[in-house]
Length: 275
Image (tube, rainbow, N blue to C red; front, side, top):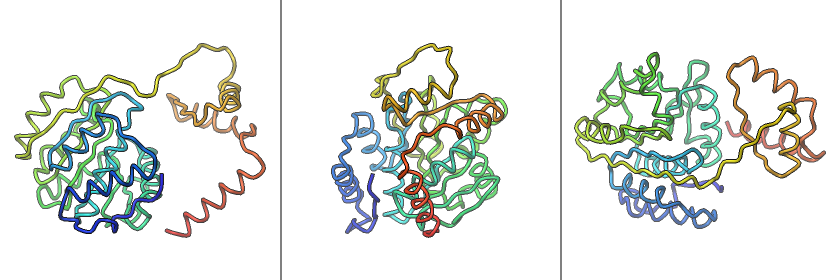
């Protein structure tokens, strides 16, 4: 998608103008939002909290993007929290491409980049610690919690719970493919923030899943999928060791044309030059 420039909004204080600018951006990029995306965005632009309960691949990131855009335009600060550092890195790079690197920062246990930026990607524990230290005084205006079902995790769920309890000034977008108690959170979050909370729910999967069983190696399967024009491919491993082994094995496979590596290197250098 093309870069999204907040300066295209003439009157940032008007949510309707910001919304019009974002919808125009979607039209220019050839993106037609699904019904649940449109509903969630409209509710957020009215200043409400939203619980977005839709399947994987249903475009929750687009709703988050709309909220980030509104926050930047109106001088507000938005936080995007994820359960693992790799996701924070991935989201950071994606938002840098969309808004420009000067607008986006990242804070994890390993690295801090542009920490005063209006958009921050961080692990859930980072925001939780900030909420404990500063509470209602924290410069946190919008909170987007990805993988919100971690709330029920016995070991780490507290990191998802604390911001809800201690940041009454913030507006929340809680996103999860699994949320069987959305109505409960809807009621409690409304009481905690004093702002209406809306549950946007859909069971429709816009991108259908395919599955098959195979006795061939994972690397061979990846090669077959790429040759069948079914990339990009998302691989899931249950341990870091198995992930590292697969990455090592895939290095011996050629998935690029002769021109692709040079183009990839150029893009990486261009991005680093902007930092």
